Image 1 (tube, protein in one colour):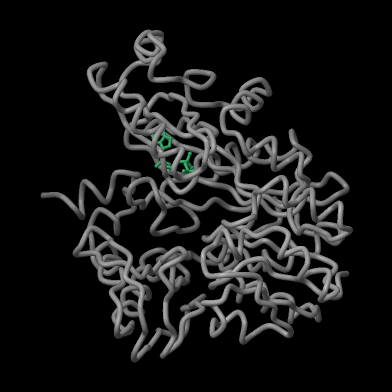
Image 2: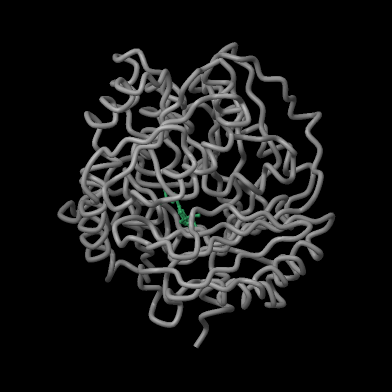
Length: 449
Ligand code: ADP
């Protein structure tokens, strides 16, 4: 087992990883930017190193500085968390070259899933159902785009090959707006990922986003855990996740779970990862992508299965065997996670950084809160706006919703705007309560005009 792990991240996930390390008896090194000196992860770690100025490119994405910090502190492994360098092949390669274990899959696995077009192609070749699409990049100045879209059938969706966080996506309903949508998606993709490549897919109407947590060891054993339903999204970004999905039965769970396991087997996957699918109204499912890291929404699976995914991830990276078996995993409860962001829901969700005054976060039976904020903490404007994840778990979905509602009523965050009121609105919505959730739920039932 590792002796000392450097956490190449910040915020709630860095705190989550430090806690897992501590329970495993592993020393921790927190890196931080100048502005993050007073951050919770810095307070929790055994050792801390400032790696650069406040912007992410100077600090949490600064590979030479992070590697130097690992070498100086004598860390034998690096946990990248999510975002930042978590799916950066070059970083995984540099870690390996420096004799530091990257806590994640092999660089080959990251590479195979990093480019969405080649990932989809590989899965299609291997018999995994995929959404009909352009089978390659499309460009706005290519006259063939109209024929491709017609063949796929409108509506289509334009997506960035390097995509993430729902950026660079455009839904197109007819040929009149196709070219413009491709131009806009290319610009957005270039700005977000430094790569303007986009592709085209059939837009599945009223789908559900269903994903499966995968665990794999270096001896070739792979298991899948019960699904997460992440259909509550705003602009293709997840807002609420739950497990199990209210609309998936045991037979469909097995069918998609096995496909997810196959996806991971195809790339000899080791450690934890997530295979994402779209499921249409008829129960047909399509591979969307695989995230080769721990996800923001991992706690719902932890509550439902009783498995500590971060500890498992560390153990698997250290070469330990997987003891879990898919057939033996029981669904112990229903869990729901609300992502509370420092954003103003009344002003089109603009970020709301600043100093937190009085802070009260909920607790009690059936509530877990993963956060890095505290009273007096200043939320910097440089990074993402997630400030807390509230997870409610109970024997049934109805009880979990009730718990979440009462937990949200307890939330008090003075000094900044946050999205907890939006979550309360969703929890009391009849359609949500009945479990009829699809990815257009928010635009249809919450933001309707
Ligand atoms: P990202 O990597 O940016 O998160 P994904 O490929 O995971 O992008 O898609 C994010 C969300 O966008 C999905 O959960 C879904 O709501 C929507 N989406 C993506 N592809 C399609 C599609 N072909 N049809 C309908 N919705 C889609």
